[in-house]
Picture 1 (tube, one colour):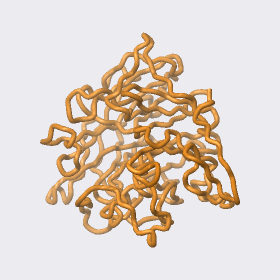
Picture 2 (cartoon, one colour):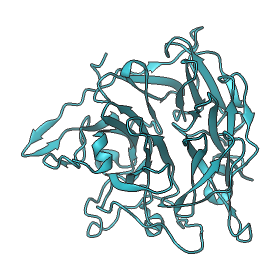
Picture 3 (cartoon, helix red, strand yellow):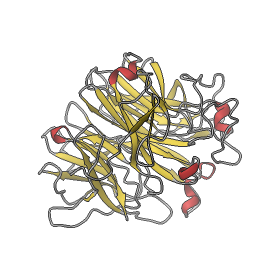
Picture 4 (cartoon, one colour):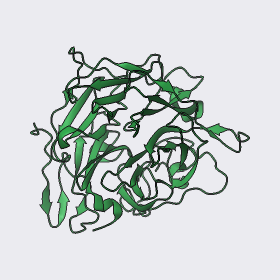
Length: 420
């Protein structure tokens, strides 16, 4: 089962290193606090796949989902993410493959209150120049086969990877976004040509029928006097008592948040979190072993956003008070050693590059440069005292010049808390 993609490490002189299938960033083996338990490529450079989803699965396995040739596939790991099976095309009970709009599946896997498995994912586009529809499928045989699709949104919406949730009531909540634009082609997604807003779909009958939230979410600057701007690629978690916390991507140099007190039907206007962030997605997930919230995101400064360093640093932080405050800031990847970056202060303003792109920094200011510049779209799976994080890793040097890959790091839970 796990004969492929095995990633053997060679150790020399206290430095852990390996070739293309293993560790690419040298790690001081003596630094037990900083060193991951395992790191390597889940999908090597050149695969073309972005935004994979790695999840906890039945029987203690990890499953990773993505697309190959616009078809949904899955790999399995039985050793906490160290080795993986060959990809297996996912099929319905009648033997049909599951088509995607492209190789980015935008998938969340859920365990329903009944115990059945389900997936929420992005399907083929219903109109040109957009992503696609959002569909739902169930599995009654532990993920071997999948039901016919039920449309959550049959026209155009995007639910980002690992974003949907099953609440304690059994309600399924699916946060989605869409962009509206006068452009009709692929350039309709450009940030300066559209407005992206978010809302929620929810189901109280395990996905048989779907309802839309009453709120649509965007950010109004000074009550609209200075315009409105994006609130997108939202992720959420349920808090004690049933309140929902949602984080969203913005162009304002930090993550914004909103709350729902009625299970996702209505939401407050988004407000700043104080967490410095690029115009890039965040991952919000509860650590099952501790009950704390874990955040994984591109923590960068306004200056870095403007200089092409908007996704070089992938950070983590922990909240022990249900998202009110955050601590234990650490970096999964970074071209420098800053663990915490200050968010912009003062009047909120859009922070946007004149010529969008990724640019290598001055190595005198960033001691780990040159290196990868597009590190984002993390997903997380937990196992005993470990967590495995997979993420996009590309736009770097060497084999990653103008190419992409999927990296995986397996870390102890103590690593996230800064404990040795």
